[in-house]
Amino acid sequence: MNICVFCSAADLDARYTAPAREFAELIGKGGHAMVWGGSDSGLMKVMADGVEAAGGRLVGVSVDFLAHKVRPGVDDMVVTKDLAERKAELLARADAVVVMVGGTGTLDEATEILELKKHGLHTKPVVLLNAAGFYDGLKEQFQRMEKEGFLPLPLTELVFFAEDGAGALAYLEEQAGIQG
Image (cartoon, rainbow, N blue to C red; front, side, top):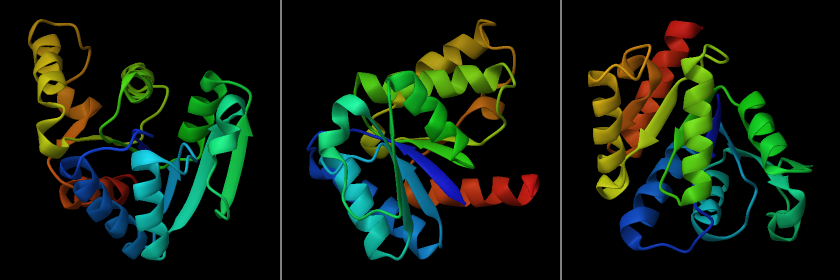
């Protein structure tokens, strides 16, 4: 399975890097590929190091203005002209999407992917990996949106909240079995 991972390129605290290492190892050991922003810094590097060390494939999709930060020696690397093209390319190469901790760029990616899914423009499973309760507030907001009629489909059909990498991968593998 090609798993697109959206996450931060910032150097983060162990409460975020430890779950990322665990998830990366599961991706690699499971024989999956990670499709990600291609950066060799921060949490993106932690993920790439872990997937690679566990035998998984790395597929990077960077953007022109960040091309100087790409990870060398990956299995496949694409550099796009802008962020919109990058997001489209990441989704096109993915069988599933996992959103890990991150800033405004990660949040932008997450909301676009969910908006596309809401409108039926893709049916790929989407997971928010809620490391250290990072997405508790967002989960509460989504639940409010659902309760107050802002979502045209049940929240459970839009996104799955996983508390750890094992839960995220188990959900994705189950969904792959259902869709396959």
